[in-house]
Image 1 (cartoon, rainbow, N blue to C red):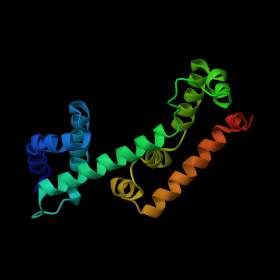
Image 2 (image 1 turned 135 degrees about the vertical axis):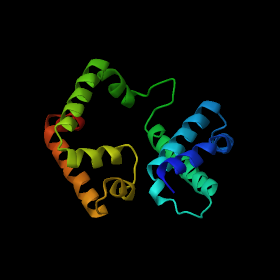
Image 3 (image 1 turned 120 degrees about the vertical axis):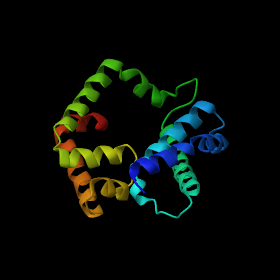
Image 4 (image 1 turned 45 degrees about the vertical axis):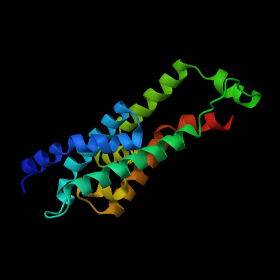
Length: 172
């Protein structure tokens, strides 16, 4: 099956995927996002699909796993956020001491440090940061999984070295 034929078959499943996504998200906009993520992953990894297998089942599995991974990421991030109207005294220092200007400078420095990374480290690191698994990155780049892990590790070391001035900020 050619990639174009595969893409056509996948796109025909979009409406049934939308209904399935609504069972997970209970929100039309979130369901659309989930369907879009699912279609993108399916088209990106079409070479993983084996002819003769159930396409709809394969797509549903991708959608379920995408939803679970996104949910886990959301839970992890929201556990760091204070959701109270009143900020306790220990947290007051963190909320009042930082401002948007300082954050913008820090973010600019991080982006600049990332831009300086060689492409062989930048791509695996950014894909990992976006939530891709090691094996997905290895498949995408066509390199062994050990090489992916090494490149991500080296990218972290290079970023840590580039951002050394910020190392003391967290220790105040």
